[in-house]
Image (cartoon, rainbow, N blue to C red; front, side, top):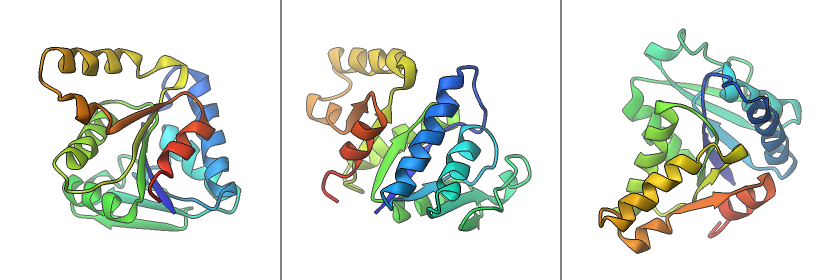
Length: 179
């Protein structure tokens, strides 16, 4: 099994996020679950990839050519795939993954998360999507999603595409549904 994790290339300012990313990576490796991620050596991405590698796990990074130097492509992982652009990155990550998890991150993380939710909604794929809501990081976003549903822009069945986990174990278990 392989889980694609969307997360930030920055550290953020909550130290629990990096700590949780490290624990999440170790747990993936210990369960023999491969990691697919954005290929950066920086921030939450780098911490996650490093923790999987330190435990002897498998890490595949996918990074666009133009971000390789900006995001400092991680050359110390199992495999680093360089692609032409963001569209190819997202497609490649989706093809390699059995499930998707979002850890905290910025616009890129949220954009990738919403795209993969949409792909499930319009049945391009049917793979689990889970948020690991570290210290309530995603709670305001979840309120916005709830508001969009209440105002008629998200149908009730589509709300079930996105699963919410409060712990690493719960997140991994939710990701393994149908796998």
